[in-house]
Image (cartoon, rainbow, N blue to C red; front, side, top):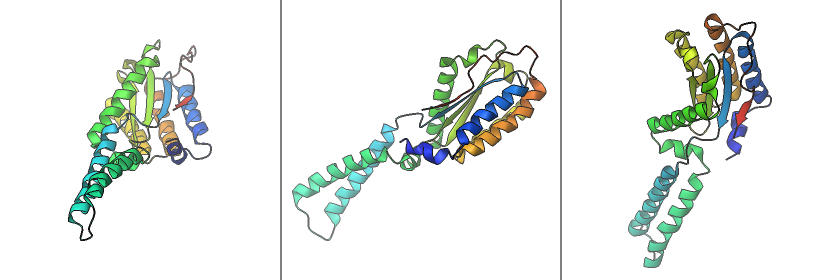
Length: 210
């Protein structure tokens, strides 16, 4: 599954993401954390569904094929094919996306993002200006979670427009596009959350990848 990162990160993209974070924080009092995750769930249910579908197709082929098969093979083949397909599906993110509802994928991304927001202490900055940019690669989705100090001061229309740009970039599954969209968030935040002379960097500047 680590190869999924190869498709997302081109050379220099991780540094570009980090630089975007630092540029935005340099002009605002926001505290931004970027997290890139391979997936936001095991999707075992998707693998089971794929395995069951392949097993059923193999059984149907054995029963209705014009070529004769022994009863033993008609019984054994669907089991073997189903197991192989279910295990193999775990290595093909596109298949897991295809058999999972978009609403369910979105729900899993949001649950993991909001959990990380609390676990990483992004909700505990002095001015409540923490922002998590959570990117989940299997789902090709992003969830941006902002603390109350951001949502109370940035007009909803401006915030949603900026967030939408980041989410659309994440769906293209390219870190460089996300870095560009993240940089565009800077002027929006600067208008409403300008950096103060005594601003302290409370959260580490990093791109968390796992």
